[in-house]
View: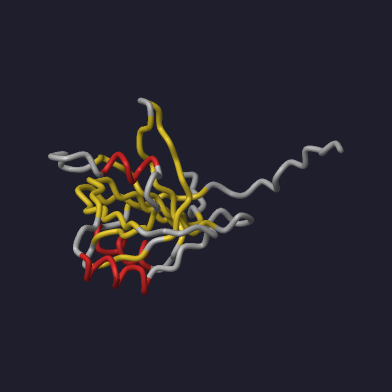
Length: 154
């Protein structure tokens, strides 16, 4: 089976506008799927996951033995630095937004919180997800992609 390269339809230039932290978090909370970036064996690793926001923190569920779970459970460790990215960009128009949250990922150890997250956040993979990770943002960045205004030649 061969696949033929089909070039995408060109779109006009886009204007990128920086988002404030509150707006970026609101947009992040409006979608349920994102990507978590962490290091594994000193190399960047990216995993698609679903999430919820809880009091400004990003919550994801994972399982015992997962690379990120084992990294966050080291005794005395303040957490693992991660980046979490989510977006909503139209594939045809290239309009939309992208948000990145950077912070420390720590395991959720409070049983009441863990039970609540198990109710609120249903993993989309067919696997037992008995752990939860909380990412407390230290840095929130985001951009909105809009149509660029035609420049006026003087």
